[in-house]
Amino acid sequence: MNVLLTTLDAKYIHKNLAIRWLYVTRPKEANVEIQEYTINDDLKRITPLMHLEDFDVVGISTYIWNSEYVKQWIPMIRRANPKIKIILGGPDVTFYNDDWFDHDIDAISVGEGEVELWKYIMTGKSECTKEHKGEAVRVGRVDLAYLEQFEDPYFLDFDLKDLYHRYLYVETSRGCPFGCAYCLSETDRVVRKFSDEYMEKIYRKMEEYPIRQVKFLDRTFNLDYQRSIATLKRLQEIKSVESFQMELVAETLPEEMIRYMIEKMDKKKFRFEVGVQSFNEKTLQSVNRKSDLNRLKDVIRRLNAAGVILHTDLIAGLPYEDIVSFENSFNTLFSLYTEEVQLGILKLLKGTSLRYKAANFGIIASENSPYEVEMTSWLSEEDLKRIHMVALGCEKSYNNGRMQHTVKTILEDTGCSAFRLFETIGNVVNALPHPYQLPLYFHKMYEALEGTLPEEHLKACLLYDYYRKTKNRPSALFYSYSDKTYLRESGKFNLYELEHYAVYMPFYSKKRMIHQLVVYHRNNEVCQHYLVDEENNRIEEIKL
Image (cartoon, rainbow, N blue to C red):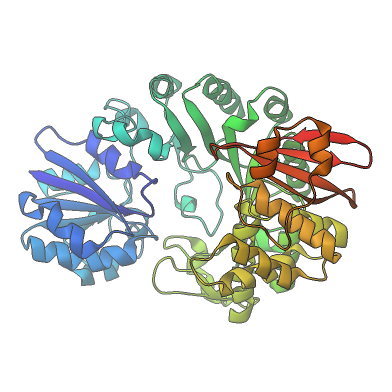
C-alpha cells in the first residue's frame, strides 16, 4: 500500500505535526511519503509534480486556513489519478462534515488518526472513519503511552536540514480541562500527558540542533504548575534553542511560578500567549470562560513590568459585547502594554457549542472557512469593519514595532482611546498603495495624527520610530539632519562616521526637547543610539 500524506500549511515556517505523527505510526506494510505545501503554492503547478500515479491513497490534513484550498485541490488530485483513494482528516472535517462528500472524496478520518486511520487504510474498517453522508462515527482519541513507543515526529531525517528555519511544534499533552464555548478543545475535556521520561528524550534531542523557535501546542501549559516549573527550568538549560513559546492561563498562575518567572527565568528565551478574550464579565460567562479579571490584570502587570514577554489576545464578536464594551476591553488590555496585543474576530468553529447556539445570539458567520463572524445582536457589519481597522492598525504600528514610541507617547500624553487611535492608524495603512515605501508611511501617519501632540513633538516621535529599526541610514524625514557641531567637539565619536553614517534628530524626554543620535556603521548591520542633552552636557548610549 503506497500512501501519500499531505497538507497546505499557512506559511512555509509552519510545519504540520499531525501528518508527522501519522508517518511515524505507519504500519510496516505501508510505504508512506510526506509532501508538504502551503496555501500560497500554485495548486495547478504542484499537483503534476506530486507523482500521484504512484500512490493508492492520499491523506489530506484539513484546517480552517486551508479547507477552501483543499476543495479546489481535490478535483485536480482526482484527475491526476482517478483510482486514488482520497481521505481527509483534521479539525475542520471532524464535525458537521456531510458537505465534504459533495467534493468527490472517499472517506473522512474523524479525530486523532494515529491508530484508526491506519486501521482503515489497511483493513477498510474503522469506527472512526466516515464513508457516507449521515453516517455516525466515533471521534478518535489515542493513548499517548502508545505513541511513545514510536520514533518521535520532531526530528525526522527529512526535516533536519530546515529545522532552524521552521517552527518546531511540540506537544506535552492533549486535551483541555476548560469548556470555552468558542474553542474546539471544548470537545476534548480529558487532559492526557506524555510522560516526563518521554519528554526528557525530546529535550535531549533539542540540545543537538540549532532551533530558532519551539512552539508548544498544549492548550494550557501551566495546568500542572509543578510540572510547568520543572519544564521551564529544563528548557532554560537548552542553549541550542533561541526561543520557546507556550500558552498560559495567567490568572491561575500560583505565586511560586510567578516568582520563578520574574526572578530566575531567562526572560528573553520565553514568550507566553495569554488569552484574555474580553473584560466583559457577562460575555465571559456566556461562553463558559471563568476568569478572575482583577487577578488577571495584576499578574499581567507584574510579569510585564519584570520584562516577561507576553502576547495577549482579545476576541471580537462574542455575546453581549457591543462596540462600546469591546472598545473598553481593548483599551483595558492595551493599557497593560504587553509585547503584542492580538485582536481576532470570532470564528464559529464546527463542533463548538457556540456555533450550535449562534442563532440565539444573533451571530451570523461566513459559511466558508474560517467561518468568521460578520454580525451579532450587539455588533453590526459596520462595527466589525471598524474592529478590523483597529486590528490592522495595531498590527502594523505596535505589534511589528514600527511606531511603538509614537503610539505610547500619544496615549500617555493625551489619555485618548487606544481603540480609536489604532482605528485611525488602520485606516491610513489600509489606504496606502501596496507595496509602499517607509517615508510615505510616516508622512501619511503625520497627516492623520496631526493635532494629537504639538507639531514638533509629534515629528520628533515619528522620527525616533522611523530611524530606530533601520540598519542603514534612510532618507531624511520632515527636514534635514540637525547641526552636529556639539557632537564633533565632544571628541566621543569618529568624525568620518559622524559625518557620513550618523543621524542627529530632535527627541523629547519628559516633554523636554533634547536630541537623539543614531550612528549607522559601515557594514550596515549594527547601529548605536545615544540620547544627547546639550544643555546639561550629557551623552548617554541607550539600548533598544
